[in-house]
Every structure is written in structure tokens, then in C-alpha cells.
Image (cartoon, rainbow, N blue to C red; front, side):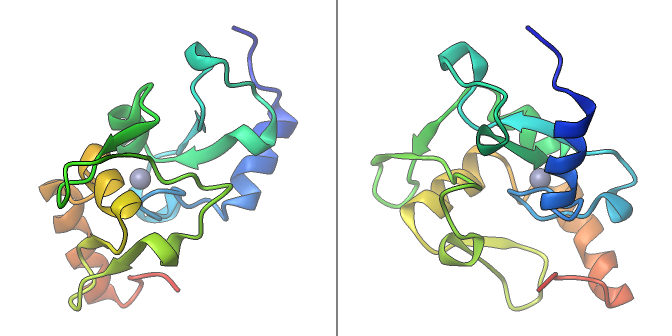
Length: 139
Ligand SMILES: [Zn+2]
């Protein structure tokens, strides 16, 4: 597979404001450089055009693997995953009142939260510190 050009990776990072486009964790709080995710995986024919790329933290990207759909835990229906280029984050997700848990507002949101483990205990623990620091949740 050809490497993604540095200029394209820089563009994707800048467009995402250095936040994971799934769980919105910022690079500067996680202390780890986020990865470039192929929204439609390469094994399913996805290319490296910026419209098929997004910035994803290691956790979200690692859980997403080559999935493009998942089961809505409420209805059991298979739905497409959240697509950062086509979907609006706030349409599909919202923060819990205490700001540490991502809630799915739609079937797409609920399925994506579960598949990507967006409320893994480790990230929930980190978010509670971020809330205490007054730097979370983001706008
Ligand atoms: Zn993430």
C-alpha cells in the first residue's frame, strides 16, 4: 500500500484540529499522535483521498479496524458507522451531564460508541481529569 503523503496527513490533522474525529479526544491531552484512518477501509476499496481520511486516536482506530457498520445496541439493526466526512458529530453523539461519557443520539451514534469502545474505562477516567482541569468536553 502506498504511504499517505505528508502534505495529505498534515491536511487531515489540521482539518480535524488535532482531535480524534470519533471520540474528539485532542492530541495534546492524550499525549499521543493520532492516526490517519481510512473511513472506507483500503481492503474494501477505500482510497487515500482526503475525503476518505480522518484523524482517529489509537483506541478508536484500533477498534474500528475494517468495519464500516455495526449493530445498534438498542434495536439490533445493523447500521453504518459514523462517517466523519458525511455526518455531523453533534447529530449522532452528545456528552453525558458529567462530560465523561459519549452517548449515542441515533442508531449510528449508539453503534459507533459500542464498536469503537468510545467509553472504555481508561478514556472515561482520563476525561474525568480533563473535566476537573476545565478543558473538557470540547465545544
Ligand atoms: Zn478516538
